[in-house]
Amino acid sequence: MRRICTFIMILCSSYLFLQAQDHLRFASAFTDNLVLQQKSRVKIWGYAPPRSTLQVLASWSRKEKTVKADTCGKWMIELSTPAGSYQTYNLSIANTEQTVVLKNICIGEVWFCSGQSNMEMIMRNDPQWRLYVDNANEEIAVADYPGIRFMTVQRNESFTALDEVLTEGWQVCSPQTVGGLSAVGYYFARKLLSSLDVPVGLVVDAYGGSPIQSWIPYAETLKPLYKAEHETLQEAVEKGKEKPEYNMLSSLYNAMVHPLIDYKIRGWLWYQGEANVGDAGRYIAMMKDLVSSWRKKWKAKLPFYYVQIAPFQYPGYQKEKWAELAEVQSMALQTISSSGMVVTADLGDSTNIHPGKKKPVGERLALIALSDTYHQKIKSQSPSLKRLTLEQGKLRAEFDFAYHGLRLEGVHHEFEISSDGMTYYKAIVEIKGSCVWLSSPEVPSPRYVRYGWRDACVSTLYNSENLPLGPFKASVDI
Picture (cartoon, rainbow, N blue to C red):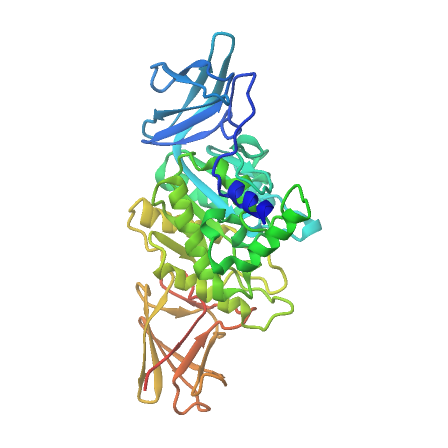
């Protein structure tokens, strides 16, 4: 019991003390080519001989500042950044023996991209794992965007909160480098760059196959909801494992997120959920824990924009399991403030959990950011059910965010209706503006409707902005 209590005390600690440093350097997140958040107070940190006095000079301010390393050799300083532009800068840290200079720094907008494999999936195709981005070769050949910079955090796990991430540093987007960039992140950044005309920096922090529990700080999981995960984690410790698995509680937060909570960002992009299909009952609570805990750690109510998982025929599950998880993700919009969701019900691949249509995913994320964070007059929302009524023997579904009206693409649709909520029949669909009328000769007294309620659904109902309707279930009260 004493061993378990000691372990919990260690995990609850938010800081892993450093060994003394014998040389001067920036933390791993700060390299040449980095992007700092514009018009902000940003924190810069690194390591030096303990208690040494250091001089910091940012070329955008030309005013030298002094900072002192602590007893473990860590130093941190806050600097003010100007408005974003394509001008490049240097940043230096010096003591009496050494000067370290970061070059080619940009000031702009920084977004943190996290989740599992569909966020991690890079532009370069990988036949071994059936990872194919649509038109990848053509897109890579013209990806000359020096205003887009990115840092990819390498996969890592830890029982305790670490102080540094594993990374090769920041890279400038070009045909030579973009192949290693998250495809969703790239298309998001490209659209932001063209709309805002300032540099865009991406911190890509994703891990294929990871459940949401791995990304939540340990202190946020001390509740019955995570009982099974705590038992698994405790068993790993008792067996003397040096590192946890990627799917264990808090393991990825500790190693990949915690070291960056002082890095100033504009918001988070999240694409995850496939690893939690079959666990929809807990997912919304865990999603709320993730967002609230990250906001506490960053000490800011930053926007959280996420992607609803795409349709896929999941093996070994009932055919509705995808729809159940996707519906829960949609419900989270009502409970998580400053959030937005991209619907991908028209972008799935029933035979590949990693669909190739990454361009519309990234661009739809950008539309939400441009609308909600940057306050541009852009229509960015997918249709969502507003009201369901029974009129003259037909169900009348009225939708928000139809904008200039709804439309079906082709003859296929995913609407089904029922009188008892158990046996459903394909509906006859009539569209009038923002309303869809549903009927069927097999259902003379309809009360229930569902849309896209199967793993391999293909959404074909769009609003006037070509944004699709996602899966839902609803009923009318008689």
